[in-house]
Image 1 (cartoon, rainbow, N blue to C red):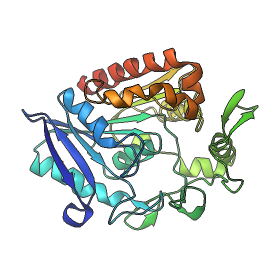
Image 2 (cartoon, rainbow, N blue to C red; image 1 turned 180 degrees about the vertical axis):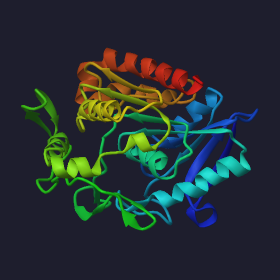
Image 3 (cartoon, helix red, strand yellow; image 1 turned 90 degrees about the vertical axis):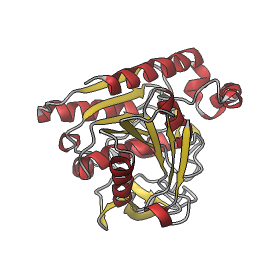
Image 4 (cartoon, helix red, strand yellow; image 1 turned 135 degrees about the vertical axis):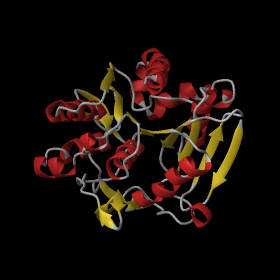
Length: 304
């Protein structure tokens, strides 16, 4: 497998590439979050490469030339990434894969830049949010994303109470979830802002796959998947789209790194339940969902 690293200064974007030794004509842009995310994007890009795709992980924040927090991240930086894939790597097809906050960018890239063949959103939200500072505690009053310098419409969760990772019982969820789940859910109740900010997937021209679990602890991603499916239904979207919702499954789902190359990571799985309570309570369902989701994603990408 071949690897390559990218910096904003030299390439216009920051990221890491994993490519099969024999090359590939289909690239997947992987968006997991910052340069130092808990689950590194390069590990997911590498997993795609093991299936014969060129995987390019693009970082959103946390390195030279990028915002230090999820604040006014420029969609423009994906233009040189796409140009690199088309002109340097000569790929015929480009897909986007985003998990959690990365799902917003997986969709926005296809919505604003076009020319994306497939969009895969795992544990997604259906709207961009107000930006946060690097401490992840304070809001910026600006959008999390921009396009040609203009802010993308967003909703405004209230993080002022602090302790967003603390678990509380939320009647709307019918279970204990992170306090941030409640903050995001409450933000969705401003229907005017929600409507204004909704991801316009019908403008992507791409096939779309959405995956979530009903046990999501961080935000109601199953609600977002259903919202987006209803949006596409009402729009009469002609391209293929599919919504997959797994019962009891955690926020942490979708593609995972290779077990063979990341044995230490898999030894840590028993400890994941401390942070993701659904994972601890329904570990078997969550582990099975990794395999099911991976098959869904790879089959989806291989369909013509």
